[in-house]
Image (cartoon, rainbow, N blue to C red; front, side):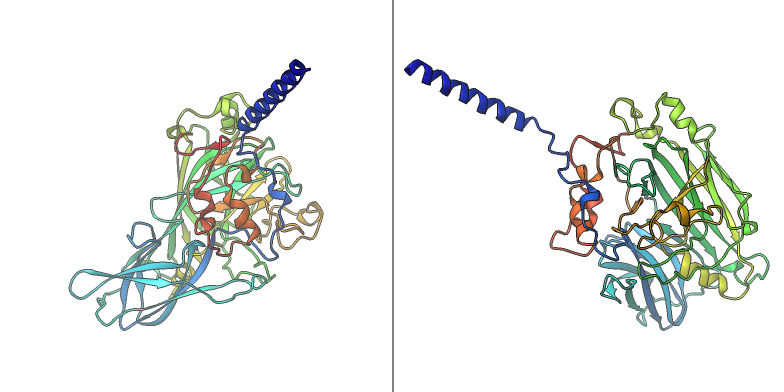
Length: 442
């Protein structure tokens, strides 16, 4: 009897040990909750950036550059012309920022920097949230001629790339790995004030750089960029945007590190729409259905990432100060560029939340299946595109984004509003687990 009891205790001990080993062997990066299980707050637009209206008051005309950090290393605007008196400019700023820094020349020959706090203008989520900041330039700021100044703005900021991520199953939910199309973007817009009073030859110069990171979708989608986007706020009000024609785009030049991959200005659209070409070569090069989303077939080094840069001039024959208004009120905002996917077989489009389908896609109303809360946002508040102001990593095929960005969940459930966890608003900086593909390596 004693022998039987001893055997039973030994067996029970072995079972506990085995269970413990199984628990220790679990992949803790696998989420127990999927993104589509979450309750998204009403009116949340999933944006990691916000448009901030900066009011300026200067005793005389001067110039200024604007940064996202105290060290003045993350520049979003360079050598802006600041007119005398009261004026304003709208800037796209990461939502995690509660301040910006403004540097301007002073009379002693050096520079002075002010920290400017960002304050909400509307506090309810259902209202279109507006943010503002105010800078009072001192008498000691240097008086400068602004008539011949060349100004630049950057998205997300100078010498850095942001990230665009898409799900390609719209209007269905898909697996929410957000790796069906992953691309890094950087945009520089240049305004040469010498040309603004030329009624026929005024222009802005735009340079867009793209890194093709991953294509985890099997459908024949390609990235397009419309200029500008037509969009609505989450409260239903329309975004005030100018209208441009394809004929206003001149001097288009393209540089690509990958043979066969390029950019075209679509001839069948009235508005300027740029489309990437030759993307099928990426899948064919690896002999796979996907590109750079499967562990066994990742590119060997991030140095091999296909990169495309194209630039063009946008003619704005307005005369007077209207070009200045377009530059300072619109091209510095998040609505200037409408990034979307276009199915090359069916013409179906997938845009960021709030952006209307382009003139080329006529069947949005019948394809969407339900009314939704906004364009490309369903009744439950889910979307099909994400943007981050950094080069962020992406998920291995069929892994929910929650599994590699654990702070993503709280950010969604709080509707992007600030909490005690300061890292939550920068959830894209804190990946974990084995299902994360590092953009510095691949």
